[in-house]
Each structure stands twice: as C-alpha cells, then as structure tokens.
Image 1 (tube, rainbow, N blue to C red):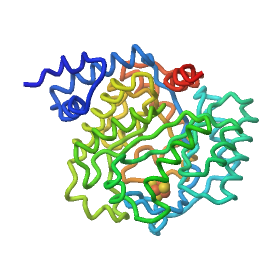
Image 2: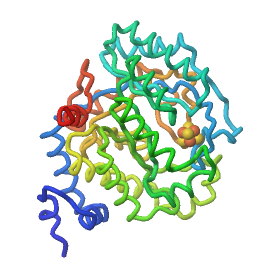
Image 3: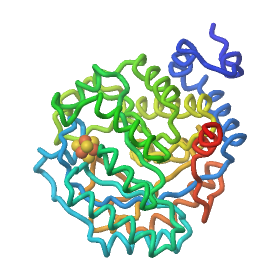
Length: 363
Ligand code: SF4
C-alpha cells in the first residue's frame, strides 16, 4: 500500500512519486489538496489576484488541431476589439482595483500587429499612470518584439507549451514550420531573456495523452523554472480536426479531477509560482475555479472583454460567462474566492514571488 503521507512530507519529489500522486483516487487526493493548500498559504499567502482578461481578437494565423479559433475554422465570426474598447475595458479593471490585465489574442506575427500591440501597451501605461500590470498572451514572436513590448511596460507573458512531449505535440499540431516544437521552446527562452515573468501550461486529457506525459509536463515546468502556470482540462470543440477522437477521451469530470491534481502537485513542487484557476476549470465544473484555488491556484482572470465579442472567442465549447458584461462577473467572483477560503488581493499586482526570488538569486 502506498504511504501518501510519507510522499507528501518529502522536500523533493521524483518522477515515481509525482506519478503516484497524479494517480491518486478521489478519496486519497483529499490529503494532496490539503497539503497543496498549506503550501500555498505558507509561500504565496491565501490571496487570489485578479487579472482582467481582454480577448483582443480571434484572428489567428495558426491551425492548432484542438482550437476553436484556428485559421481554417470558417464557422465563426471573426472580430477585433477596437483600441477604444480595449482602453475602456482596462479602465474598468483599473478603477475596480484589479491591478492587472491580460491582453490575449490569436497569434499574428505581422509588423502591423506588433505595432498595434506596442501602441496599446503605451496607451494603457499612460492612461493608468503605469499603475496597472500588463500580462500578454500573444503567442510566438521574435526576441526583438518581446524586448520591445517588455521595454514599453508589459511585465508578464503567458505562452502555453500545451504538452512538453515532442511526439504528442506533433499529434496536436500540423507538422509545419509554423507549429514547430523547438520554435515554441525557443520562444519561451526568448521571453525569459527579454525579462518577462514567464508563464506556460498544458492541456490535460487530450487525445493520445497518457499519465507519463503529465509527469513529464510537471518535470518540464520545474526544470524550465517557470514563474507562472495556466493549465486546464481539454474541452473538445466540434469544429476542429481533433474532435473525431472525442470517443477516446476520459469523461470530463476525470479530466477535471486530473487537472486539480496537476495544480496541487505543481504547487507542492514549485511553491512560490503563480498558478491560474483557468476558465476551462469553471467550464468543466460549476465550482471548478474554487476547487482549483483550494488545490493551490492563486490567480483568476475575470473576463472584461466587451460582452458583444465574448461569444466569438471560443477555444473550446461551453465556455462560461460569454453572455455577461464585466460588471456581472465582478459581482460573482469575489464571492467565489471567499468560498475557497481566500481573500482578494485588491489593488495588488500579485507578481510571481518565484520571479522575484529568481531575480534576487541571479544578482
Ligand atoms: S491555440 Fe492559439 S495559436 Fe493555436 S489556433 Fe488557437 S489561438 Fe491560434
């Protein structure tokens, strides 16, 4: 019989122990979540930080096989939020003490796109007197572009690897230059070099994935020494090539449970990073984000995209809150955080303590 208590008391976890924890039953996993919650309290406090999420555009030059806004999906309305509406949304976040926003978009690498983002960062910094923290999630770009955005004031960048396993990556993406695994890794290294707090993450429960891949993912994030993580259960979208494998998937509640265990194990291993309770958690379980917060997550990204666009930014189906305005979300989210036993870090940037510790040890 496995002695989970003994594993959870260890200072460092090896591959075998990570696998044992990820394979825990529902009953046994209660002690894993409890331990992760204690680690969270000790290293990053029982505080949840808000990042107001602006889904800038669903135009994308890529064709990831799992994604609802992939270039070749013609079954949706494409949109671009105007600068004016972006600034209005950011102002809402700033005035409501969110302290940080995330600008997210499909991936475009044109000079016009780069220029527009640079201009938006500058306008946001000016409007908020540099008070609001900007996180970008705009895919792979060149090192020079990353440096430019960093110098203009953006401080964090999310670029999910989706899976750290090269063979699985090749099954989830078209095999061409635009979807190259090594290029993805280089982009993560470039973000680090440009001075960003770097976040990555994976999908859990995708077709062809086995438990060993998830063990690899945890080890990848540890070895890459990431500052932030956002991961969620894979939720299939019918207008994507991967949908034909839906019959082979674990039930959604099991994908959700596995994601909770991934969050908890990562919290125990990387004690001081920021971990997001993703929207996909809420889409899988009505109390999904609260459960993720209890299991070690400390970031929530309330959607502040103007309501009229929200229905069209669907990377997966059944996305929650697409018919609400930012104010509606604000009302329900604080109550949800309290339910998880946390308080809200109103007006605080909530930067990754891991990043600060990394910077101090580098100097
Ligand atoms: S996952 Fe990202 S890069 Fe891939 S198709 Fe979707 S939006 Fe584009």
